[in-house]
Length: 229
Image 1 (cartoon, rainbow, N blue to C red):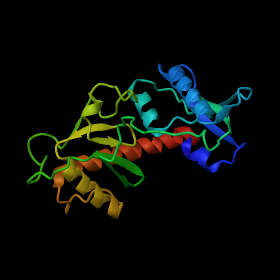
Image 2: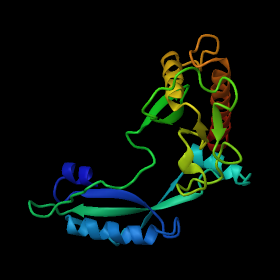
Image 3: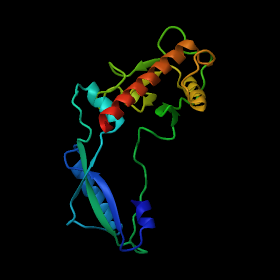
Image 4: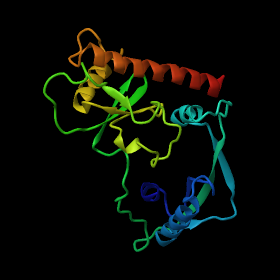
């Protein structure tokens, strides 16, 4: 909103989509805080225009719903309200924002894209000696009973332990996130999966990671078919 106000001329309109009441327990409180912040910062809400925005269920939420036992096809069950503001900005009345909100994904997380699948890895800050996960415990361990969490809530049990998160709502605890990042970087550069035979992470680690990648690709193919066919 700060960026939008900076590029919209005084008197111009700014449209913002916002969750409907009941989408989450804090939605009403968040809306009240937003409207108060906008009013103080020179944005005037137009209450007469009520527009609902329907959007397709995102990939990560689709897999989560299936993990929770919902088998019905629900391509566009979510909706939001479109808020319309008129920019009344002036030299002494404009939006300001101090971003101290905690987030799951910060600069501590590195993102890698392989064949269109995003892997987010938490930075461990150090490299372990030797090959990890090649014997003994698993290289990748789901933080819950299954890799895909049946919820998209940030408070879901075990989620905070994850240091690997995928596009399809899979959450893992990796025994060596530094090595994992190196493997994903190599895979991203060649964009053909993880090279099992030559990867420094070892054959077992690469097989585990490739298995996750293939599962994500299969789930995404199913998702696209359900959404757009």
